[in-house]
Amino acid sequence: MKTTLDIQDPLLEQVRLIAARDGETLRSLVEQGLRKVVAERSAKPKPFKMRDRSVGTPGAASVYETLSWEEKRALIYEGRGG
Image (cartoon, rainbow, N blue to C red; front, side):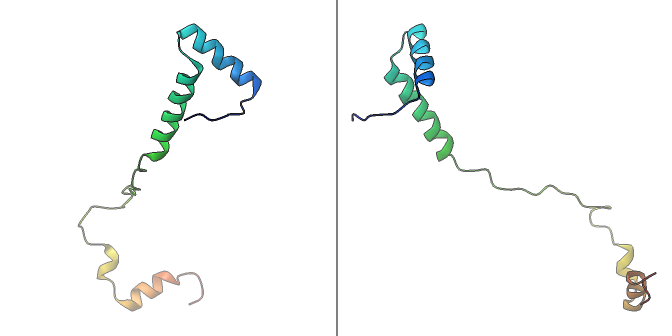
């Protein structure tokens, strides 16, 4: 398929120099560039994985689990007038 592209003169000059140096055509370099962009943008993004930033020993009981509600409340409001 034929199409018309409007490419800035300095960029086009650089591409022509590279094509001449490497013995390739301007068309082949444009196609290579388009294939690269399509491949990069078509790839599925890696799923987000949250890093483990846990504190303490995994599976160990927390000191706070043994406290009564009144003791927990007292710690929460300690120094705050509650």
